[in-house]
Length: 118
Image (cartoon, rainbow, N blue to C red; front, side):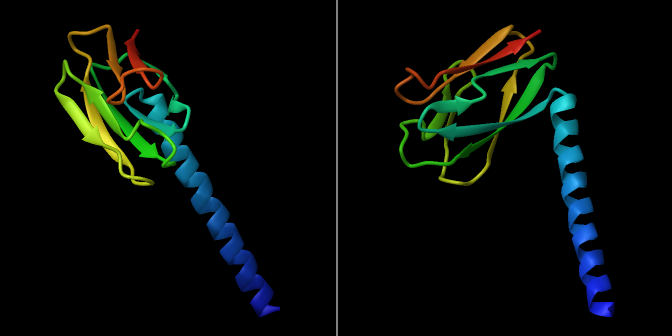
């Protein structure tokens, strides 16, 4: 009986931890400043970010080798960062003087994405 009780407490603790992590990440998106971007064979997801902030932080995670989007490039802000496989990379974008900022891979084709200031 004690073993069941301990297992039940561990399960409840794990569920509570996951729920707290979920609340934490939803707060990040609610504060309109930090956004998670997944990079796969189709490009950057989401490919459009809407924000009201003067500065945003995008956390990129490339999840496949099957893509040319192995970096993030924005010439106006002098950004050229490699995206190692399965490693989050934080990149800060300045929106103070722009209503729209684009970024993409070295080919700058189908993998282009945009940050739009509302």
